[in-house]
Image (cartoon, helix red, strand yellow):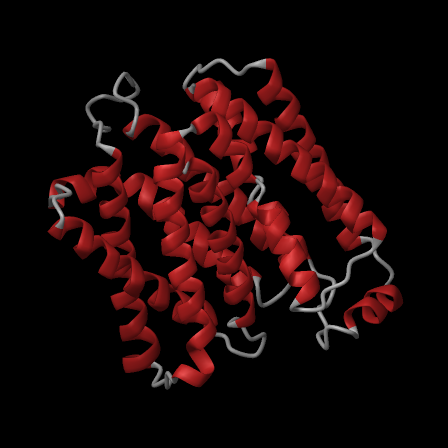
Length: 312
């Protein structure tokens, strides 16, 4: 059963990447806020279902989990902006390198030990992301235009296009760092500030915080900026939101059932994102891009295996 759940998380999260990209139009400067509205709405509905079925939650718990949830939400906003400026094939591997950075933070700040396998994974990810950035920024403009022509898009070479997914990676890693403190019953880091929360309560707190951000985004986009929302124009965002929430739900139970097997399977979901971008978005990268992405994939999977062995 754990394998079905792990593959479900992989498919839904990679589907979230795909549909979010399809719903992010380069000429729509509000697309990231619209995506926040969609994800917040779906997560809010799921949170109320969880509460109705017995998950405990309080305003205090929401505040306790705010350091982690705010980082996750902020990183996702940067991720949605990123999709307007760069191929999904490039952004997804960079964004999903946050696990390596989180491991470094926990090692440096919390004094947590890092095993040899995790160290290898971190090195692979860091080297792969560096090579991917070099491949993207040094590519010849004519070669870039030629490979983007089939996808009927044109992304200009820019520092911003690379900076945005890197910001996602850094901020998401901070969220994971706070998670490692708040969800660890034995954590002694700043005990007067951080308190332990059960995972189900923390997840509902995160979803309710996302719902709050969706309301803020709605006020800004619809009521202040007078933007119209239709199923035709925003449908892909809704599908992305459904996939994001469903993937997270499957992830929780897959990791609980078999962390050793599930972690490396789920950690490879950005590989599926690249595959979907090639099939459905017609994105095509250079061999240097793909070689760099392969190094990142290897590092992410190694980290997933190491995480699973550590939780066994």
